[in-house]
Image (cartoon, rainbow, N blue to C red; front, side, top):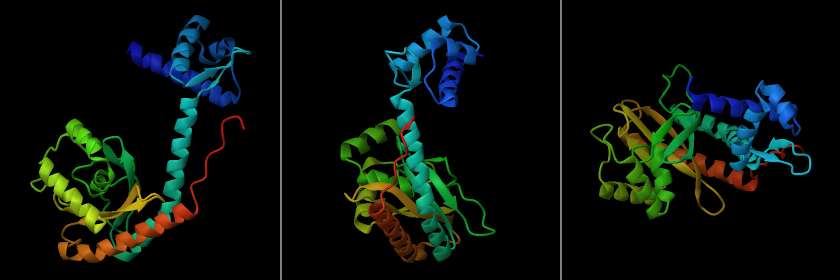
Length: 262
């Protein structure tokens, strides 16, 4: 095991010890929980504290969960809450279209699929939860790009490039900009075998109260079944479902998780 991996494991052990204890711990208590010398514990907690993952109370000198861990917990809770609340709408899409339905959000320079529902006896598509899609050649990705400022789009393209995945992949900045303008005008985005031959997808945005894209819902299917001539009709269903999901999220905002130690 490399020294770097060992350091990470030790740091995680200390964080887990504090979480399990549900109270601040001293260096001696952390040393006992991790089975490490106090001098080793001290070096690790200094690094964790400097990066906000734990926090030392100056009066008691004990260590508790820091703001970065709280923020990670909050983000995971809100993501779970979004998946839970949008899931009935994904089922509506499956029932309306007979295709696999998915939910995705912007994740760095890609789009992460958060949830997927498929019809009975249907072959599972590649929009599996946790998988990451390139922004430039996926339906959900183009929705997010179309909503971002031009400078951010240019930065993402510079980092990821426009590598051809299939003969249909957009590989020039000019063509991508034109495609994003179409997305803005029609209110939905397509992946017409741009990411994988034989697969066609289309998605619509879930907008917040300010009109910004917070997530995307859509469908994916084989190009032999999800025919090109069906896209306008299916896009209507997808847009309607996305609008309904957005309305619920706006009228009933996501609840915040309770703070640690409350």
